[in-house]
Length: 463
Image (cartoon, rainbow, N blue to C red; front, top):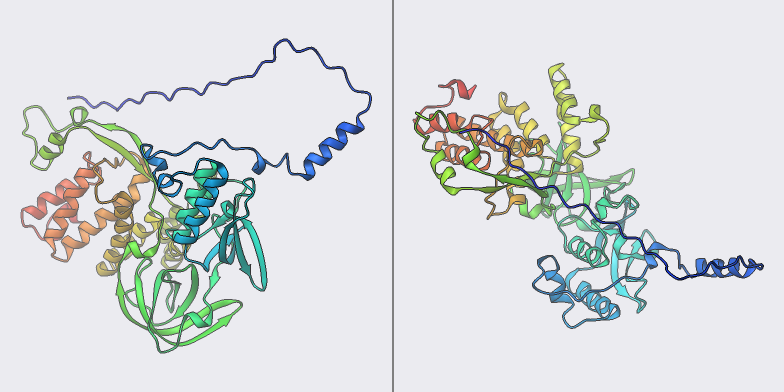
């Protein structure tokens, strides 16, 4: 058999249409321009040239159209734009618990109400508090914490407006908040346990977020087994504020992993064609097909996907700005602390940076296999959460944004094998072969060794 690349039909070009005027005579230039100037000035004052005030064509949503299915529930029976906005207002008041943390132009605010004034052009308005000042702003320009009910509703509302996601709008700069919500003193009581999400680890402190909120603090504690993405239960002994940032001292009582509780937005999956086992190389014709490959071949064609890769702060136009490369270079130069700090900063900005989890696992692998496994497992769990339980596609290694997730999986498999948990190791390696049948990482060799009863270190593949 020969290797063939799946072909992709080119997307049809969008056709440009120009309106032509027929049978119109040329209008002579008016002598008196003042009337036109006055008309334009009046129109500007009324906001006629504001893009937000352009009329929209409102189509009644249907249940059959899957992307609009949420609208069918909310807007049932609402035909006019005014009726639909009133239905959206009612849905917001019923589904978004307020007050809640939010961000406007990157600044933390407290959202207090979502209303509709009765003017369709104004749309839905969010009322909020910033310090001692009360303000209002269009709901489409508000960012709620990822995964929250507010974030889901704003995404739905922007879809109804015909806008894209907030983070993709170049005119809106609050996708990555410039400031963070500080934890007020009344949110935490000394002597009462509190749950925190670990964002980054230092030698004597943990950068954390209060579970279920966007509020951040620094926990002063004896750092042990904590890793970014873990949820810790802390018994506070002291709290204070310095330079408008919240600090907490306390003892970590327990650690757990619960990716669904982190409130993360799943990583996006982009379809990249179709994988066909008939075009893959499975060995020479006179060689038998290996046991692991038989069910994969029998399954037949499957869609290929590329997982979104998150690298906070990277300039896509500057190839030298890759922080993963920087971390590797620092480690190669002997600056292990500096390399670790670079990766921790990435996770403090976005826990979905799977390559940071994978490389932190790599850095700890020889020194502390248990710590390495925790890093790998958090990264793998975030990726699996994004795939969903029913994912049956292919994540090809050749699509480079899939590699961080596959690296995390490979690390989990190696750590499980190393600790003697051969059942888990075999399950991970087998799953990797389903996701990436070309097996660029050599999972099939490790699977064969594990199934043969070989211990860690007995084969070259374990090195």
